[in-house]
Amino acid sequence: MFSIIQAAGWPIWPLLLASVLAVALIIERLGALRRNRIVPAGLLQSTVAEYRQTGVTEDMLRRLNAHSPLGRVFAAGLRNARSSREIMKEAIEEAGRGAAHELDRFLNALGTIASISPLMGLFGTIVGMIEIFGSATAAGNNPQQLAHGISIALYNTGFGLIIAIPSMIFYRHFRALVDSLVIEMELQAVKLVELVHGERA
Image 1 (cartoon, helix red, strand yellow):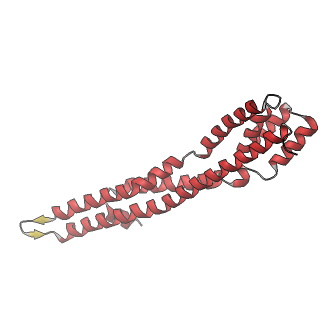
Image 2 (cartoon, one colour):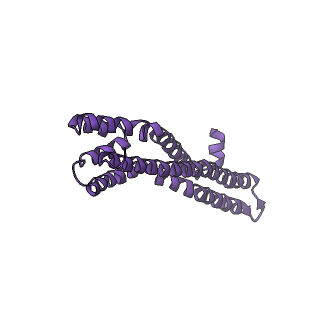
């Protein structure tokens, strides 16, 4: 591995940093965007059952806030349960925007890495080409410098693509997952409003 890094020259170091960041972001998002952590099954039913039994209590709101992003949305709505349907919906929408922003965290960084990695690889290719052209002298080509230039060009291009392809796949996957989670949160929040205001049994 070290021999490959040595052969790729100094342009490989920014790519190595980008790869470490990409792996860290992917692992973090895989843990953070688990469906049962964001929109736990049965939370709506248990929340409505508790609301009908005891009404809105501070203990209930505290537990919902600490439970999950969906719980925070429910807590925001239930704080305004005695207000009109429109006010309750506004509170839920505000909390939902905050939850959606939290789910989006680090996705722009991952998308940026996916976009710039091929460009960083291309920069390494240009540095390698400069070395190749620098190997030409009046006496002929310097084979060692020529081989080093080709190594820099090819390793950096390949490494840039190796980083970009999985980063883009995970970025698209996480983006689609966030969209589906946000829609599911919205649907459950609308059901909560309707159940609290007696518009649905």
